[in-house]
Image (cartoon, rainbow over all chains, first blue to last red; front, side, top):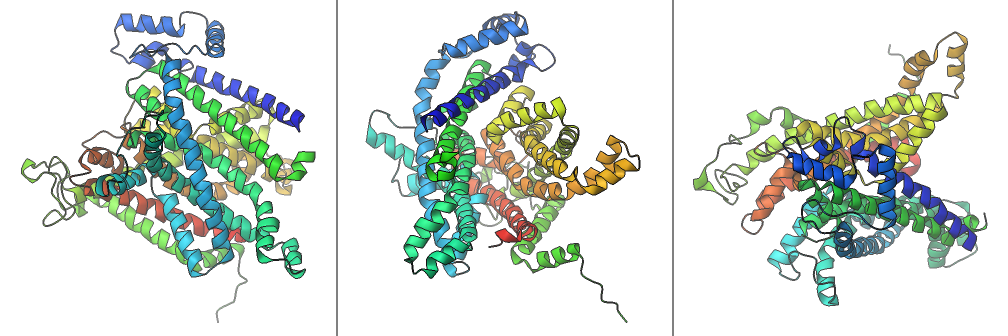
Length: 313
Length: 285
């Protein structure tokens, strides 16, 4: 088991390197001067020269790449072209807000999605099933930022139960939590819709299998059949979907953090694009992709826990 | 006397589609929305650019059924005109993406080799990024505007269609009729265009239809973030963006375009659910 985990972690390294290379080439492969691409046509000569210097654009491409990799390995992402703050510091400040948001929404979506999926599958074509499917369809169709605004309108503006905006003070749990509830519920509800649908259809598929009939035939309790025989077999595709939608969720943080004015990585990216701060954009993209590689790694390891067949392979 | 023809596979599918209430409702909604988009300038009761500062931020009522924005422009008219851009961006970006994705995917799948390895590698990396981040990155490089918006969305979907086209090509390529075509002397490109393309395009076009919903949502998201079509041209996304400022005074400025996006996306999702049920009966609810 330890050997497998180690091997899987080592396999993630080339993916991270590939992503890093991709981010490096995004701007540099375009025709024309990358500095002009980044700063626009009316940039001053001084600004262009400074950017070329900071990105090392005066060196040959392979040397630029080596410098880029070396700096990343040293966690030296350079400094913001606008505020002059070291990017590493900006990321360090923003990261907890995004990590909180991602894990809280994931938790909410799993806690809603899996039970709702099972319940609708068990009551197939009854009123509850239609209700659950309607909710799931709404969740799939409502834009996340619009849902966020509606939540804000209801819970912050009208009822005044929760703070309207901001990320709260990370050192105080009360503030950290109250500022997290609305954004996390928004994203959680969205992803819950996907998980509900996947759980429902997978459960329906599994419930048709022979071993479920066998379990029923030998007089097993209904709960045991559902949770031990059916759910455990349905979990693999469900985990896969959770993994896939984590991607959607990370994309969602960009919008939700903007809606709620939450100072996380997503907001950092939007700000960087607005101000054409390439150094910040490049670094945050890197962090995002490393995060994705890391999450996929966790998903992969989860498979092993859920499915003994993969464990022994 | 009328001859009873044996029912074809296609006939069965069309009948199943017509029986499926969800997809019929979805299709009906899409037709209505398309008509609104086409005849927007005739349906809209007011000129969308006509400002009237005496009638700023009105609540829904008469004569402005859904109220007015901060420039006194009619909210309903703007939402109707917004249909045009949203639908156009959604459909055109998916068309571009499907077309290019099919070409690259087919060539990679058919010829294999180093090109295939390269394509698969790039697709894997691109798929690791959230769609919205890909399109944002591209907008950063290309700058804002309607055409760059379409290109950015098309690019972010591109890897998915490459993957689907490549996989379909791989399975079709092993069929007997491909071998037959080769035996009668068709070249590689002839086989690709006349034998593989017609056989893989059906499912890809269906999947493409479903992605129009996502494209519309992404267009709205990008416009909301301020990277889409610039005001005063109304799109649902930029209407929400400018309406948020007045959320506490007149929430209708946000709610109306938001509902418009939602109904459109629901329509495409309903149609998609219906099509999926027919093409894969195992998943039928």
